Structure formats: structure tokens, C-alpha cells
Image (tube, rainbow, N blue to C red; front, side):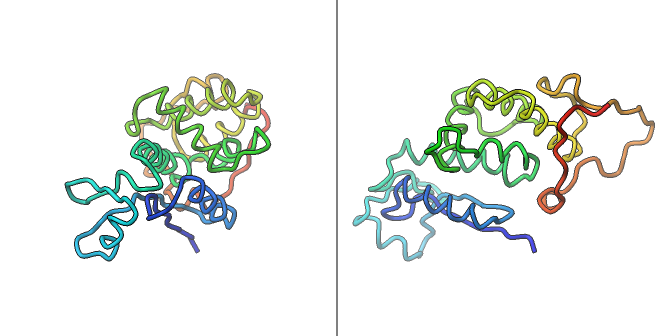
Length: 215
């Protein structure tokens, strides 16, 4: 069974620390996807009764997304929004199973998986200023840069993980970080019917992580 779990940022009295603890507990259970969303004040919903008591402020236009609470300021919730978007691209897509495991490792010895991914999220936003429009190749290159140059990981295992993930996804371009590592593909006059695996197939089909480039 494909296990899809939901978590919502911006609930009354939810702090960034308490949300991080809940995220880490859920991640430890091992769902295939964790869908992260922002609280929305739908018309007629009971959440409206907590607006004043908990300092809830929402966007004026539908879908009335929360943008500040008594426990989280607007800047923090913006960071959470970016976190959710990048998590969708890297984790929920199923394209970066081995690379994500490296990214979530506790390098400092005291940070959680949530903190590790938030650090990457903050870096990627500062590096690119965008939350969409990334090609799979751009994500590979950004991950390689962050893991090797910022997280201080050895280049060989990072590129091996990225190579395994990239090949398993079915993508066939040439990320800069994997130059010289990708196998050559003979040109074919016929376009293949299926070049990319589906999202759920990526989560349910484990693939080996090579320790050296294919020949």
C-alpha cells in the first residue's frame, strides 16, 4: 500500500519546534509521501473561532491561507512554504531516494531531519530565489553543490547517490555534476513510450546505489 500522510503548517499554538518534532516522528514511521500544506480558513470552518485568541491572520483572498499566527511570524511561515515546495520536488517526487537520505543525515550530531532539510531549503532559496521551474538536472546540480560544498560530504558517495537516483528516474539529459558518469545511450529513431517512471513506482521500486560509475 502506498502510504500518503498529511501535515499542516500554521495550526493555532504550533511553533516551528513543535512542528519539527511532529515531522520527525512521522518521517520515522516511513510513509512514502508526506504532503505538507499551509492552514487555510475555509468559509464556515470551525478554525475561524480561534482567530483572535491565537493571533491568526489570513490572506484576504481565497483560499485564505494563514500567513501569521501568535506562535509563528510571517517570515517563519514563508520559510515553511518554501520547505513544503522543495520537499515536494525532492522527497514526494520519488526521484531522489538515495540523495535525500544523504541530505537528511545528522551531520552536526544534534540536528533533526527537519532541521537538515530546512537548512537546505534556506540555502536553495538564497541560491536561486525560486521555488518552481527546476529541471531534474538543475536539482541534481544544486544537491551536489550543497552536499559537497556546504554539508562537507565526500564527492564520490554524493555523486554515486545522485547517479543512481537520476538513472532510476528515467531522465536522459546531462547534469553538470554527473558529467562523465552517465552511460552512453545509442540513438534510436523511435521515441520510447515510457521514459520516466511514475511517482508511485519510484517510491515502491528500490534501486541499487552504485559505488562506481557504470562502464
